[in-house]
Length: 59
Image 1 (cartoon, rainbow, N blue to C red):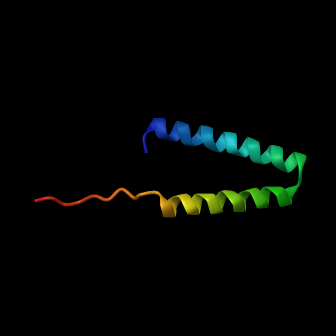
Image 2: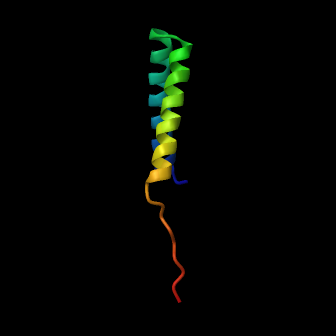
């Protein structure tokens, strides 16, 4: 992981932490758990349906 990827990862985690904290502050802990479950289901669905990058060995 190079420095650009680390910076992007840090920014994304900072933004997502702020959004999660805002949801927790406005609604409740149950809403954060529910949002996490929805995001996990959507992520799982995307990983199953998107085409995977396959490397082929050519001689």
